[in-house]
Every structure is written in structure tokens, then in C-alpha cells.
Amino acid sequence: MRIRDLEAYFQTIYPVERACSWDNDGLLVCPDREQEITRVLTCLDVTFSAIEKAMAEGCQLIVSHHPLIFSPVKAINEDTLVGQKIILLMQAGISLISLHTRFDGAVDGLNDRLGEKIGVVAPYRREPLLENEPFIGAIGSLCEKISPEDLAERVSSALGAPVRLYSAGLDIEEVGFCCGSGKDLVLPCLEKGADAFVGGDISYHIAQEAVELGMTVIDCGHHASEKDAVYCFRDALCALSPELTVIPYEEALGGEIVDFS
Image (cartoon, rainbow, N blue to C red; front, side, top):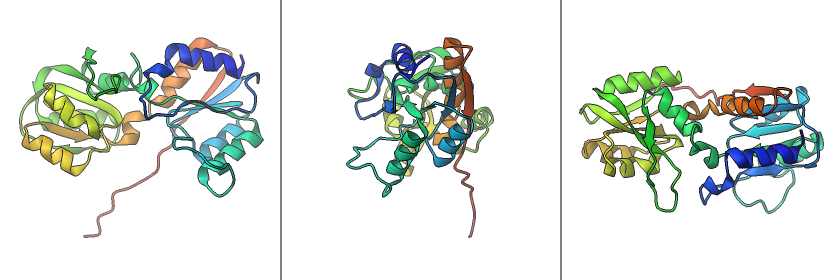
């Protein structure tokens, strides 16, 4: 198994053509496409600790969800965090493949995993919610009406994380959802008939507008909605080659709510 083999495999199951126009993923760092791979680390973010873990485990490849290189890089040196990480990867002979929005919107991808966990029943409605971005988010049914509070409790329990509830006070059956940052999809899902929206990084003013229009919004957090990526990638790699050793590396920022009032 070589780097180029895995690059082709991921293109087959998660085609780059399904990535959002603003995204940047794929094979982002690669000392040698012909390098043999026996050990892979999967992670959500390419942090220094993730790189150090890959080095300690003797991995030749990291597969991450969030791209290390997102904005254009004008120079690779030690003046920036991105530059430091690229240098560290190259010196260690470790390649990096990032699979972002093409993985989010795939059938059985990360967004589908979120819908399944919070009890939205497949098949989901996948009509375009944003112009020119047809693969972001989905809408589905709970097959029963529940209160905003019950849905918030279900989401929190399923993801193992606190949530923020903006309740419209109306029972919910149709739910729009998007893993990661979902603020741009709240109102489009409302227009498509969703009673509630579940996603991360929801801005206060968008939630306020949605509630006034009769829609409940649940901010479940960016990390909590996407942390399963490390295990999805592990499963995909193990299905390709049982001989690969795959190390899922789950890491959170460790933020906590502190009340100084």
C-alpha cells in the first residue's frame, strides 16, 4: 500500500468533486507518493500533539478531517504555525491527507452520521440548501413530534456534550442538520420546512431570527458534531486493508464554561 494508492482510494469513495468550492483538501503534504504505508493516524485537526503522536507511533500518514492548509500559503518557514507543522511533517517523512466537505456530504459520511446519532430517520432530503453548494447539510424526519427540550436532551446525550437551545416552543418533527459550522444553513432549512436545526457555530442573531420565525435551533458545538470523523476514517482504511494499523487520535480543545458573574 502506497500513498498514491490511498489517494486514489479516497478519491473513489469521497470524490473531490463533491467538496465545497471554498474548501481545500486532499493530499496536502507528501514527501513521496511512492512511500509504503503500514501505519496511519486519523484525527480531526492537525495539531502539534497529533503530529507528535503519529511520529511516536511510527506512522507514515495522517488522515485528518480539517485541512492543515486552508488559506493560500505564501511561504513555508517557522514564522507561522502552519509552516512549522509542514516542516515537522516533511522532516518526519509523514504525509497528510485531509478529507473535509467532500466527506461531510457523502452518503454515509459525517453529516449522515450526525443525523443517525440524533435520531433523524434516513433517507434524508438532500436538495441544495445553498446556491452552488449542493452537498452541504440535510433534512429528515424524527417520525414523531417531540418538544424542543426533548430534542436538545437527545442531541446532548447522543454527542456526549452540552448544547445550547434556542427554543421556539413548538413541537418538532422535521429537522435540518449539519456537522461542523452550520449557521449558513439555519434559515435555508427553515424555508424547506424544517421545524428545528441542529449544528455547530450558530450565531446569536441567526438563532434569534429563526426562533422569531417559529424554528428551534440547537447549537451542538463544532467539535462534538465532527469528532466521529477519526473513527469513520479508521473504518474506511481497515475495510480497504486489514493489514494497515490505524490509530484514531481523538483530541478536544478542552474549553470549559466559567461563570465570573
